[in-house]
Structures are given as C-alpha cells and as structure tokens.
Length: 332
Image (cartoon, one colour):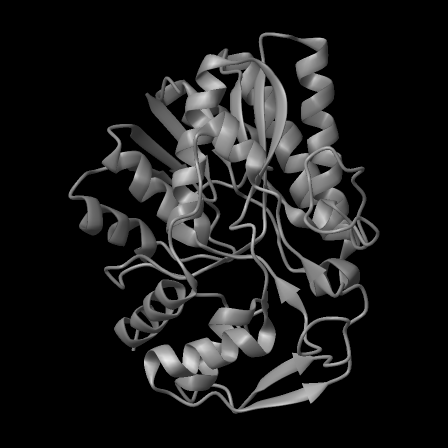
C-alpha cells in the first residue's frame, strides 16, 4: 500500500518510514523541515536500500498538498506533522493552534477529496491530563494543561466526530508515552534543533560535552527517588506500533484510541544511572525546581494494544540508552 507520512523526516516519523519500507509498503513523505532535516530521508533510503518520495510541503499549503495527493494514489496516512514543545506552546498558543489544528483540517479535507479515509494519528499521553490515576487507560476522561496538549485533545475529537459523521472513515489514535532511543544502525535518531526538550537527547548531549549538565526538575515528587517517573519506549518499538495500527485501520472503521508504551515507569535519576552504566560515561546533573504542569508519574496500561493490535514493546532501557549513545557518536 502507498502510505503518506506527514512529518516523516522527524524522529518518530523517520523510524516509522523505515519499518513501512521494510514491510513492503510504498512511502511518500510530506515534511516542511521546521524541526527536522532532509538528510534523514537519505538515511532512510540507506538503511532500507529502498526508495521513497519526499515533498517539502507545509500542510497549511492546501494547493501543494493537493498536488501530492494528485500525484500519488495514497491508501492511508500516518500523521506526525505538528509543533510539539510544551513550553513553547504556552508562549506561542496561536501558532500552535493554527499549525497543528488547521494543518490537520486541511489534511483531512484533502484526504476526503482524494477518497483516502484511513488515518493513523500521532496523539500523546499528555491527553490524560493531571488527575487520572496510573496506569493510564484509554477509557479515562481526557484533558490537557497546555496548548500543545489541547491540540492533541481537539484533533482526537475532530477525528471521533468525523468517523461518527461518515462511518467509512477509520482513525487510529495512538497515545504514546516517552519515545527514546534510535535506530540500531546509528544513522537516524532524535536530533532536535537547539536545546532538547526531551530527557534522553538532553542526557546524551551532556554526556557528549555539548551541554554542561542535566537539569532535573524536582526531587520531591511522591516517587521512589523523588524524581518524575515516565514510561519510556524505544522508538523502533513505537514505529512497529504504527504498522500494527495501519493494519487495524485497513480492517476496521471508526475512531479508536490505543496506548503505546511499555507499561513500566522509570524515574529521571534511574534513567541517568542507566545511561551512565550502559555507556560508561558521566552525566552531571543539578536538581532545580519543578516545572509547572509536570505530574509525578505517567505510565501506560498497554493491555488494549496487546489484545487488539497484537503489539507490545520488546526493547528495554539498556537498548534505549545504547542506541541513543550510538546515534550521538555517529552524528559527530
């Protein structure tokens, strides 16, 4: 099947394109490169030995997006494209709402006009908000604490409403937790522009001497060591989850949410220690005050994905740390 991947040059998108190509799908990438690099597309080709189509197109550019669909008979879309920094979303709410929501609406209208009604959406565990108990289950009420999170909540609602209005649509809403790691080749991984927002690339850059120390936001949470606990999932496991979701979208209609995580929590300090031990490096850190909106613990109940999608995470923390460090060293 020909699959259009928005944001396919990004961290999760590039790994998903590798898995799609290895599984025999044809891939079309649409990415405006606002937080990614075109060289990732070449790395995908290098890893897989297969070709794909790449278009530097912004989803807000309706005419260019329509041209992509006109040139490619797309069977399904995996939708990653969107701004994703929580802190920046608080500072720039209009930009986040316009880019993420309007971009998705234009994508959906273009899909409808092209007769393509199958979409896998990159949602987030942030939709579980502040008040739900762990582990998070798909049936919990959803909410948000920042504009980024609200864009995910709103897009999920748009897709639910669309599938209700037109039962021929299929939308799989993947709520993933904390993707880390890199491809085992070391060729692709998380390469954010500027100072990283996510923990593991931050740890890796400190270990590599690019940044002086890791800031640990709070050590007084109700967790075993006082630092925040999150469900870290290897990006390759996450990418394979998108293939399982794509298979589901082909076979079923309606909108359905699934958690993609390991089902286990790891604290910030546990991750620091694991990275140091696995890679024989030092990661200096400094405890600073909590960030507004952070919760003590967030990890997934993965039973629905295991039961319905026949998917579960296979890689552990050691592999996540090894592969992240290999990517950093490969990128020097």
